[in-house]
Image (cartoon, rainbow, N blue to C red; front, side, top):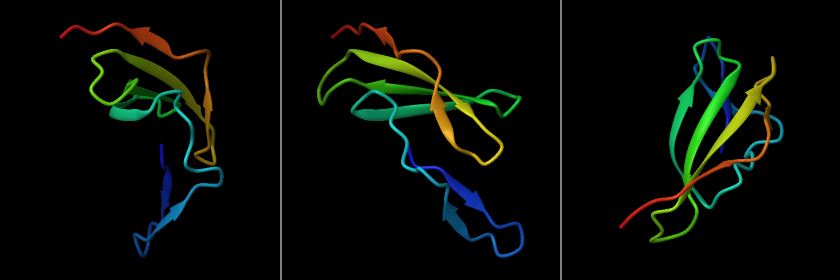
Length: 79
């Protein structure tokens, strides 16, 4: 998962140190940020053509660096 800082004047994007961050899955498909801005949830497909997936929880520190919170939650899919 790529994370960027936005310069408030020029609006230029700069990669946050450590970006991109691993989510524990092959293809991230959706993202949600907790209203506090301190947690990010990432829904991912576990493989190409797979209906199985995972939800990863990542903590966000003051610098925008992400760190995993526990293991990804497996979500079985259906065809």
